[in-house]
Length: 179
Length: 157
Image 1: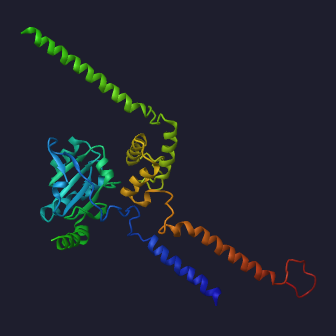
Image 2: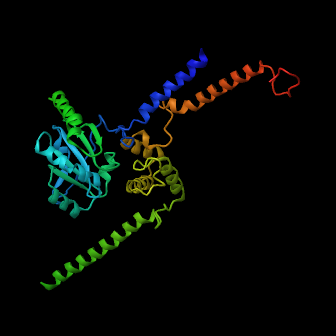
């Protein structure tokens, strides 16, 4: 009896393991952020478009906002740009940009040519603010609630589907709980 | 009228020169800690630097440490480690800095905690299990007739 049951149990165990581990829809590069539920790291940088102005997330406390990390060197960021533009047209939450490890002129050109979905773009040339947010690739998109806590992080290009599936419900929940 | 003006301009020039000299000095002081190859001048710090960066995963390439990786993020994080070492931070403080931002995954050898007990314990459990199986098989076989002797008569083998 055991002779048959044991290999069978091992087989079932492997099937479960592989179903999880080899699932093609699971992005093995998407890591859980330790920042979830914690206060959002400070942003105090110069404005990409107007270096004399400062961009700070302290001013955003009390409202839900989205932080989108991008750079002109990032191919996938170009891919998601259309979606970001469309989302910004809906005027649901302010989208703040973090231009990560980039050149100012190129980034300014990028926004001029492709359109600007951001309420403000913080220019993080040395990437230190990005490191504080745990950024390890672009694009990354964070959701921050009214209390200034990070509630969600999405790694990969933003799409309308992702926005509706992952972001909208969380924004609604944050507004319900925070109000 | 002329004299005070000239005096103040001399002072201004002196101040500029002084500022320039001090600027160079501080720049040199900051540079002194690291040589042209990015090696820390302090041997002890350099040793710690090498150990720490080997322990930290490069999240861009995931199977490389930030000591081995050429990814830009790895370069930045190495610089971060250098600066923290120069600032006198402990190894634990540096690992905490990284795990607070990038999660436990950033460390190649996770610390022994209740939630990592399975990872650390699994090899020993496997060893015990394997040993048990070997024991069972050997005992089972020792009860069987020896069959590696040459066949002596009809009917065997």
